[in-house]
Amino acid sequence: MMTVIHAANTETSLDRGALNRRAALASIGVATLLFALKGWAVLSTGSLAMLGSLADTALDLIASLMTLLGVWIAAIPDDDNHRFGHGKAEALAAMFQVVLISLSAFGLAIRAIGQLFTPGGVADPGDGIVVSAIAIIATLALVTYQTHVIRRTGSLAISTDHVHYRADLVLNLAVIAALALDHWGHVRGVDAGFALAIAGWLGWGAWGASQDAIEQLMDHEWPLEKRERFLAVAACHPALKGIHDLRTRTSGNRDFVQFHVWVDGAMTVTAAHNVMDEIEALLAREFPDTEILIHPDPEGHVDQALLGAPDLLTESTAVLAQGRPRG
Image (cartoon, rainbow, N blue to C red):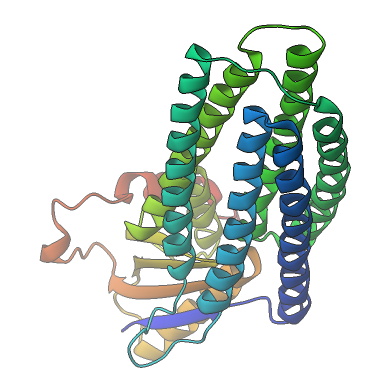
């Protein structure tokens, strides 16, 4: 017997979706404004550091658009050809962003290295400094709003966007420093040096983003701490004799879990089903937006197909012993 639960926080799902869309649109709006301002500043100053900042802003805009598209596709309900939903659209969108970021970082690094050997000064840093200051103010406002949305919704997509825009605050400060040192400090090669640093920053960000996307595409297990918390909640039910073959994964903003439980072999199907319902109710409160598949086994039984497979058998037994209420 198997039982499936679709646990979701339906009471606030509409509000959370609206907040996430507003945050994504705010991100797109800020990126569009800054792209126009920085494009003008690049033409005015000829600064490579400003060009790097422009490239980063262009990627911000593309990333925000792709995030919005990915979240929209991921929210499409299950259909006959996608029974597990469309959540991996977010990971595919992220990989597309990683390719763009990597190409941009490589191109900027090549141009910066070339300028190190044929250095040229920044024409007029004033425009670039003003634009960077505006970018800092706009980005700070966006980051503050994103923080509010993340606290309300817990959105992974908005959280990822939030991290990138926080990095942009440092990036714009670096551009101001490069422009000032090059023009007024007469520090040779500082503009190209900062551009190289920005290229490295972009490359590092692409690497981090690719790891998260690959983990989702490869159905990576939940972090150990989250799995242990899941087991502890399930272990609160006194009828459970053990848990084994726990498997977890994440797809977009949805989690998927399947596991086997041991119950008294003398239980009727109806009694076992009632136990599963009670376990589901416990888990639904702690792990919303999670699809859970439970397979009950008579106590001590292990499927031959599972022998030798990695699971949390020993760990789950310990958790059951610690987490079960004492009576």
